[in-house]
Image (cartoon, rainbow, N blue to C red; front, side):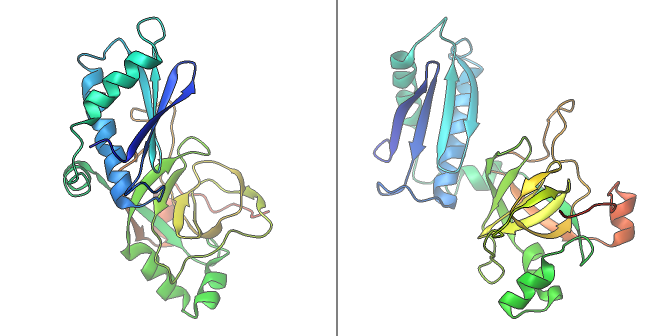
Amino acid sequence: MLENINIHIAGENALIVYFSEQGGGEVNANVSAKVQQAEQLIRKAMEQELAHDIIDLVASYASLMVMFNMMSTDHHQIRNKLRTLLQSLNDNSKDQCAADEATIVELPVYYSHESGPDLSVIAQRAQLTVEQVIEIHQVQEYRVYAIGFAPGFAYLGEVDERIAAPRLSTPRMKVPKGAVAIADRQTAVYPSVSPGGWNIIGLCPINMFDAKASPTMPVKVGDRVKFKAISKDEFLTLGGVLEVSYE
């Protein structure tokens, strides 16, 4: 099934595979499932016939970066091998791969005015109570669509349109580690202190990136994430820190 898959050069030792539905470039769960299935197929081949050729894979919303070993292969050879592998992708990937292989990860969140300075703003905009915003956010199951702009920053979607919120007009200079936030119909947990323009609604005590751990992150592209509201005491017991400032 290659009619909606395009492979392009992405550097001297990389190709990028683009996926779409019906020739479009839209991002949705079906396209993400195809990316996930393709990554699994290629990783399996990396353990066998492509063990010396492919170095690493980086999955995103609707694409898959493939980095290869220039000492053993080249763009042309890898492109042909990828096309052969991807022939086995099927239209049921959205049902099979995602449903069968995805891990469901539960992340605790301390939702409150002190941990989520934008909670009341979102509630007011949506004409909901703060409690309703919290319930809507945690009842949803989110797909991990991509990871970046920082190590451990997982883009999760899709947020219920009732509590979707545009990015801040002026980004904060300092967002605390563990901040749970919303931007448009995406949500995420900041893995470290950084600037950011997302709407902060709570804090998560779970470490989203540890370079010394294996795996380095609790989630990967294709996984599902569920948020669970916890109390302030539970947050502190799990190692959460409240001495934060929102600049």
